[in-house]
Length: 192
Image (cartoon, rainbow, N blue to C red):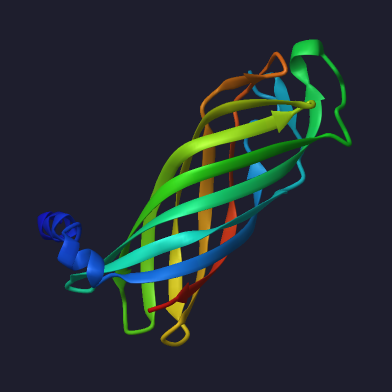
């Protein structure tokens, strides 16, 4: 592990940046909220929400089958709302919870072969959430992992799982404690 960390630090040098492999990506998935009717005041539905993201990244070869990717990501999510616990509203059907975030992500990766690899990691950044017609800004954390398949020199397919969490924040006077988990799928396009 020490060798991987030292290689990661060496990858931050200007020479390593020039040798990195840049890529663009688009990611989509579904997720379910865990905080449906807990001690927060925003009640999510049982139905899954949707997630769409995209961004740019740089993949660095650390040697010994290890790689690390650093990327910037824009993400949007939507979830159905079923209630507002602070006002004891029984239903909020027809209303949605929206999240828009910007994260910096780091994904360590281990190559199983020339085409297959496993990865894990996450990201952090600001997010705006909207519920009941009002918006608030909070912090967003992303964690996850998965498996990647390099289809050819340009395209890589990625199947994994993502966990999303926002710091508790009030939105329209109601405390929101948001977290969710679900499968995600990515298409990465490497360019010179």
